[in-house]
Image (cartoon, rainbow, N blue to C red):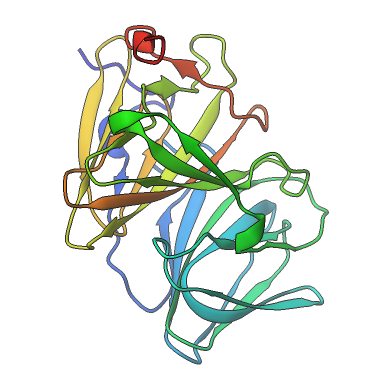
Length: 270
């Protein structure tokens, strides 16, 4: 029997967002809709010489460049940024304080993801470049993956934690399964994953489940987003396809505290 989410009428089945790519700034998912309590996400896609502005009143924002070259401007700051692609090099990302207008002008075709969450006024825009990203190898064997922390253990973002995970073809991540919904005493965190696939015609599998039997598995494709409002959430890349996801979390504490599924904790103990 399915258990409803803590937001009335919503279940884990309501968590896949598939928005076709188009030029400009387009919302992918929004807090207050579906099961999202705090996180909102946009895709920014610009042709060469294209320009877009973004401003989130009462919310801090992080822009993660996924590919292309552009100039980003906020307050009196401006930076020229570039990334060959998510599978080619680490991220360049910009933190934007609440209410501050961001302007992006592309010099080549460019694509980025913007995530936001409610936060107090104050702070300055801060750019994180590729060499500043903290790269970690996690897991072993068929659940080995590479995790890039962008805004995690810092005092720049007030509440948002943002990073990227890279699954080799055939490997699992967010594994052994863990959660951070507060139901077992861990801090309550909401999360969203933004997916890319290499080659792009491929797919991945994103499962979400709870101890009391609610379960859903999404076939995720290049450009999809999945909201994780609660529950365990392992990911699998099929043979032949590398999988990437940009992740953003926000919640009670700015800390990556998780609760492992006790049925599967033996995997890391052997």
